[in-house]
Length: 224
Image 1 (spheres, rainbow, N blue to C red):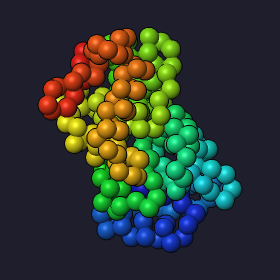
Image 2: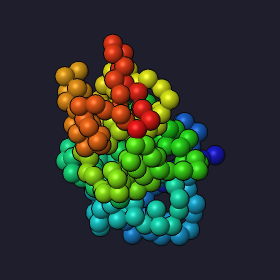
Image 3: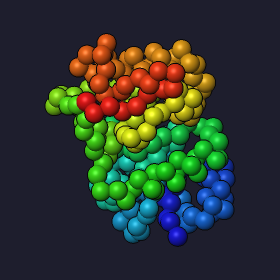
């Protein structure tokens, strides 16, 4: 049975999440502070951690760092903040995903299952056309130099590198970005995000070789 480590100081959310996860067949250990999290990490092994960014004696970023230093497990941030910079910070510090409160239970369970499936894979980095995406650290580099993506741009890129041989429809991308942003993303907004991402990762955004267009359908990850 998979062991979930829940670091959440809101007792109501912690209780409801514990009930949800146990109903899904997981074992759950819950703590409410950074200090308690550090103690449990030295005593127990876990398969995945759910970490609230705001804690009474620190923040979830520090907890994420401690988890990654001690145990090689996926970390999903739980955040009530709509501050994009906080989300990007979390991803850059090694978090594997994030869910914005209030979240949909089925969405959270799906994110947990996806993170657990990816957790055992051999490589956490992806290379294409001079672009390096390190999903363990959240770092993206182009020709050796780090580039900085917004949370939604990073999410968009992850969809492509996670499905390197598939055509990704616009409808699927809209759903992915909607889940990430916690708000509806329009078709026009998707076009803007694709354009911005290409400007950062392509050698020639006007003739993209990494994210290629499949007319009338969507996009696919080229070979650089």
